[in-house]
Length: 178
Image 1 (cartoon, rainbow, N blue to C red):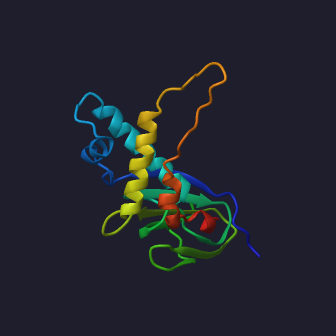
Image 2: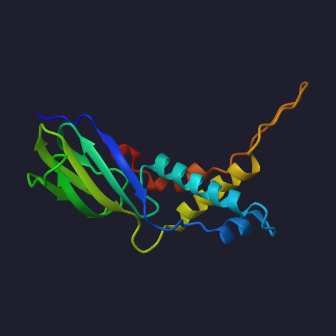
Image 3: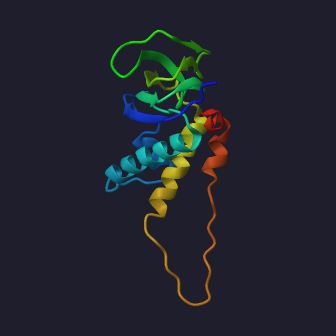
């Protein structure tokens, strides 16, 4: 029996537009000035990337190349998958693998050799509202808590989590990876 081993993401290249734009962020934060626009855009990208990592999915369109040293059967990570571009042994195309499913695709192989798969991911028909909201919530956290807080004496700080993880957890694929 072949066991999947040596998994690694070789490359992730964002090719799509951010699902949360500057106007959405400023509206959510009730910001009317332009002084923080660049910061807000950067924080939104960081928030989207964090949500993607937490869920194990691709929110924006991207091209991913991943590889295994040996491969039996596994769901391709960071779905939903739009299309598989190539399957190689590192240099040459191979044809001793099959793919099953749509969106969340499994690669089936009996390969005791390195296998590299390049594919396109991202949501067809737009990003779900819950994911946009999670990104907005996390962007808000990053913006409003961008410096440390120090309070002396016997005072305590109570943090109120905006629960972005709860907002988006139904889209999680982490249980299916590897």
